[in-house]
Amino acid sequence: MQKTNLRNEVRESLANMTATIYRDQSFAVAKKVLQETSIKEAKIIGLTISNQPEVDTVHLIEALWQLGKTVAVPKCDPKTRQMAFYAIDSFAQLETVYMHLREPIINSCEFVDASEIDVMLVPGVVFDKRGYRIGYGGGYYDRYILKYSGKLLSLIFDEQLREEVPTEAHDCPVDVLLTPTKRIDCLAQRGEYLING
Image 1 (cartoon, helix red, strand yellow):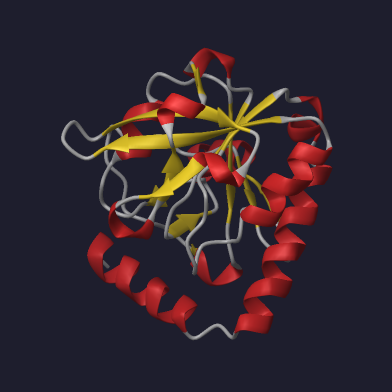
Image 2 (cartoon, rainbow, N blue to C red; image 1 turned 45 degrees about the horizontal axis):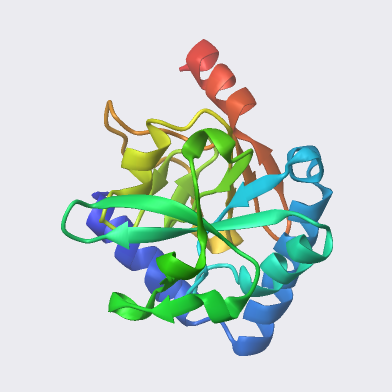
């Protein structure tokens, strides 16, 4: 199945989720995130301000602040298709831009270099157990991850998981997938795939 078809199929499935299920399952994923060793040890965590039907990151960000973590969120440049991360300590430092995305107001935040981010929570629409993903089509994270060497996690609903997604040579898979019901070690899955594939 082509990327566009897979993306549409999963988005349709997520659109049918009730508000209660969305809230409860987002909470279950956030709970798992806070139990991750890489998150406990991290000083700076990079993540996107979620838009439904993505797993809700707003409450997660509040929890991370309470733990004394620095939260860095991306500012996208639609002309260059590049993004840069800025530390926020309040949602008042965000503005709503194109496609209803909430991004940092850069003159009220501090720039954070990729080398400073300990863990990156990578969004996407469709994932497989090896950690390969289909994003939203802009390629922002694909480009950013190329220069990033920290830990890559993705927070997803079980509906977003597929047996296999089509990959290209430049695709950068994530290390761990967290769903309401599973923790998937994608590094181990990729090793197994190489042995058995």
